[in-house]
Length: 443
Image (tube, rainbow, N blue to C red):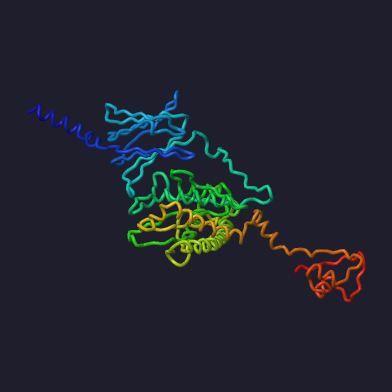
């Protein structure tokens, strides 16, 4: 009897540990971004973990509490600018230890993600260079043109990326993140080839960029316009057509409240003026002026793009729509979001997965943006200077009268009427003299 009681007591003591040991890792992925490396662990539920760094050589150790690895990890698949290899081993106390052999010291950050879409619970670990981000100097391509005037800069945002695939096609299972990046790259080539314009991408590969960081990239590059590329999805597979969105007034109001609440700590600029140090009333006025102009410019540009998208396919709605998308909320940069079609529609998915149709979409967006900026070029840009030169009235040509000239022969030679010649030179008779300078009116 005593032996049975002892065994029951021992079982009760180890039962909690057994219950905790059912966390499993069934997948690991790595994403390489320009400024960081991201590792994503697919776990069966929220998991307790601990990170710590070691030196000589640099390593990052990740200890998972009561966790078992249910998949094979190939070390050669886990290499990046920060990671040279990955090792792992189970510990006697039920922990799983994963060791990242690093190429340099890093600043690690970890957080859990709840189930979403095709993914379950995930542990995300980001590795950044170990340096003060505020002290890092961002090298931005000089925005000038040797002929005078700077280029118009367009920030192109390929939606989703990395761990966030976006919508999934219903037939071909095409990922939205793949389509958006392909169109963004094609659009960049078109813009870069246009004199007086250049483009920058918020992401250049398959990795995730935070929504507010996308806005910061555009601001860092001194972008004149921000266009976000997406592919829509809906539960009804018959839904189809492209849409163009600008920020709604409600979205603008909520963002204004956020900026005003954080203005003491914000390094962001509104129309070139920092909100920091301004009283609430002045800051509110500055922000309102900036947003009013930005929203109006966004709508004018969006209308031209909406019209061009209608020329290559079906439109989902007969006008530009308003929404509160986060990437449209920059108060100082006109912005629009283009839903290129419904990836959930089998017919539109096939088109969107086609390189030829992606090029058509890119050309349509480009034509709309080009038309807008040739019509309303920002001051100080090469396009503005070209427009000014084009609108200047040509000065009247001048002619020095020679021996034998008459008003009739001069008018005939320059293809103008004698009356026009008399009027512009205020001549009241037929008498002219050698050496007299006449202004020749433009035809």
